[in-house]
Amino acid sequence: MAGLGARSVLVTGANRGIGLELVRQFLGKPDPPQWIFACSREPDGERGQELRKLASSHPNLVMVKLDATNHATIKATAAYVAERLKGTGLNVLINNAAIFTGVSLETVDAEDMMNGYNTNVIGPLLVSQAFLPLLRRAAQESTLKGLSCSKAAIINISSSLSSIELVPQNYEKPVISYRCSKAALNMLTKCQSLGYKDNGILCAAVHPGWVKTDMGTQQADLTVDESVRGILSVLSRFRDEHNGAFVSWKGETIPW
Image (cartoon, rainbow, N blue to C red):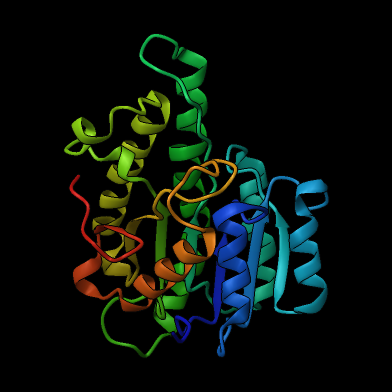
């Protein structure tokens, strides 16, 4: 599968799991982006080792410090990325950073809920706002008609556990703060799809599947390689009709 045709991509939560594999597979495409900004809270820490290895052999990969819960670092990152892009826009923003806490209705507390919302909802909101000028610029620069990830897009990594309709089918895993925050992320995605459509920016939510990562555990169904290959295939097919969609890594529509 060819790449997205995007000149520049930014991924949050890129130091492990799905985020790291997204970076790795972008780099491995026959037509990789000219710029890949891999964001994490501690790029110089132990968890940044794999990214640093990749960056050492790929000059188009730029590691950036970004804490999605810290407005000051978000603004600083946006300014840094704008400087590196030298007047051009950002084609794809993938809001992947998230936290997962296995709390039930009986054990969840206010701190659990606030932490979930801060990272899983407010973070993507603030990051999207900070990079909106660069996304708008990419859309304005493009000669492509309609919406696509080749032009400008915000992709929010969601979860089927956020689907209200599907709760009776998967409630054996309550994870209340995660479910509620990802459901709110879906609402944010839908609002972004309407608010940014006239700017030429496609916005969609993607469920990556139950993936063998630190968050998904090794009991999960999918390898991270399978999940990300599916995600990138889906993103490459996104067009106007997918604006505001909630789909799986296979491209299947997930009910809200």
